[in-house]
Image 1 (cartoon, rainbow, N blue to C red):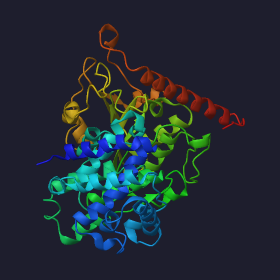
Image 2 (cartoon, rainbow, N blue to C red):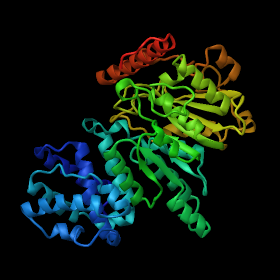
Image 3 (cartoon, one colour):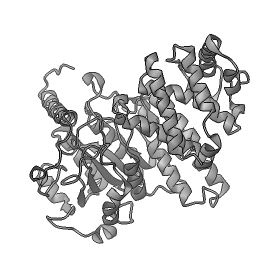
Image 4 (cartoon, rainbow, N blue to C red):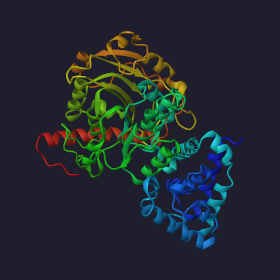
Length: 480
């Protein structure tokens, strides 16, 4: 039986054929999304959702210039005349293909795949594999929104989403967090069949929702969710604008917000943030802890500058620790997100039943110091998180009882406890490290120059944000 990996590799190799047509990696994956949607609808016998005359067979039967012209007509028709998710996937669609022979090559190659094996192993896994392949290709630029699956799996395992809970990703990317949360629940409920019928319906239609800013990425996420049987609202919009206020409060939020300042240097246009800031991660952090129901929980990937930035950054961290129990921080290894050299962390917290003094202690697990440089040569795997998951324990809320069972490993260990009072004394900075870095004494290869440059750029951007905040506090006009 042909494996999903083999099918993904065959699809990806077609990208090389299309380079002569000026097709970029990201355009190629988007192009494949349109074609795979049509083909998969036929394979899964769900073509009823596509208007007659605009289905896979109709496209396949044509040839040459007629086929390319019909493909363009099909995209416009489905994006304007179809209904539901079909219309959303094809909204504003256009093809990057200019040569009829290249379209014909794609159609023939997709047709020739082992669709029996693909159905057996899961069409969702096939598509997810294609997205992962795109993200691992540095030239595609897709790594900036594709969170490594072992990291997503770790975060979901520890947050433990449950049936009947609302799960949100306000920066959805290609939908990886929502899909992994759905998979977590299905694995523990006999693929939902052990749940009452009304709960099954809720899980499929309403449990998972979010928002994505970039239209092409939103299209990929819709396709990804659909192939995994998720029909929840995945909106195209800007979470940091008033659109973000329409997202219902969640029981669970899992996300990896985009890095950097808001485009153009302006503030988010939301008017409900207590602490306005141009730093997108700090703005997203406010959305997340304000968007949790009392008792709700979150795991969010954030860069180091969120942990130490002063002024507004300090105010937001203090507000977070008042309103929520920020019980755990995971310092992530470098090289996980190739597109950014900035260092990242996962913050785990739960919203308090009241808004005062919820954080008593913060546990920090250092998975960064003296760890390998991850990338193509050293792949990140679930095993790299096993020690952290064991130390974290089985309580997703980080209750006092469960925190009392944790073991502080001391100055030579990777897991340590820090009191809220100690953190306050150091200006509410959460950028906490204690292990000696032995990398200078090793003969390991240095990180790639691009990573070093991107890391320096990230730290410079954090410093610029701080200077902007100081100028704003002094009443000076700040140029974008």
